[in-house]
Image (cartoon, rainbow, N blue to C red; front, side):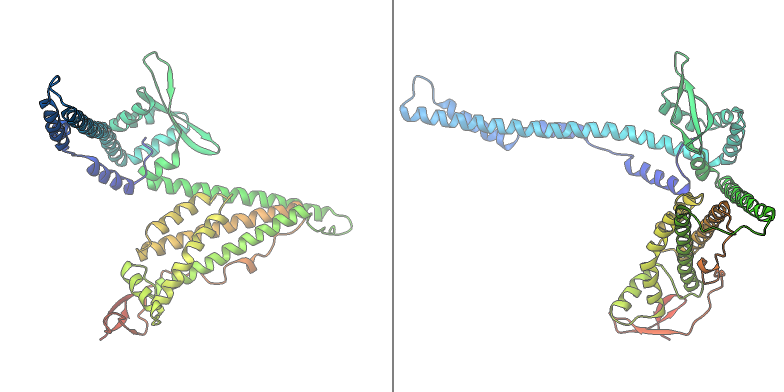
Length: 437
């Protein structure tokens, strides 16, 4: 039950293990070099020899001065030589400490890598074990720990006691597992809470997606039930009125303010999806490529005043993508889609040069924005019903463009330009700049 995510983290761990492993520091030779006499020692010995040639009792005023001066110089150089050796020894001691820490860290990384590898192979078993644990049955988790000894070893090290199992609980509304074990005296020792979603994302992504879909469906159903109940009360009140429908009173200031903020949020989500649709349309038509080569060439073309549909589309994308991502994150706050918006946004920013991946994640972000808007609409309709108002028509606040289909890129009319460095005539073909035919 390591808390590490999926395959990208596995690659990072493997790279880190290679980076910090296998050092061959010649500490013995460095120790000898640190204590070896230096040029200052040689000079100090030479000056001391000069000073020692002048014997006490045979000194004249001049030789006494020479003896004193050379003796002081010898002492000064000797002290400097010793200070240099002390500094080298201090550096060597720090290096020895670093080596020991590095070896310990290397062992920890290797253990994390081994635990991650074995847990990745038993993700389905882990997902089933968590479902059992949620129902109060710990046997699945115990069996999973038994079949993942490296993970159990790592968790035991963190607990400071052999890990036995885990409990299932909610912390601030989040499903979590809390591992526990017993120390030598038989006392129960508990570890830090591990979010269930973190485990499933890393080791059982299919189970995570199913779990997320169920949560979203439940959230929408709950919102619909509340809205329908509020609307039912409104219609019942109208039907029971003796002298026809009761006049609808304006929303109280507080409710009107909330409604205004909600409508603004829905409109912003619609505008953000409009912007996403335009970018997806450019990608689907083959007019926009985000790879590194096209980025470099498009930047040059725009800078030199030789812009093309590709270079202009890329400039628009680069200036808008961060704003679209940030707006989506901001507008998803406070609703059930917040975590998914964060995940999609991170994926977009993590793979900026992979055009296909960018398109997939932008389409996912669009869907998340639509779900966020639906949740805001339901909340607003419920609010209105509480004050005797009918549901609103939100068409004016929804995206003005249709959802772009994942169309096969079509061949547009050739776009020609000149390479600003070589003067060669080039053309945009399949999203790439090639020599003109």
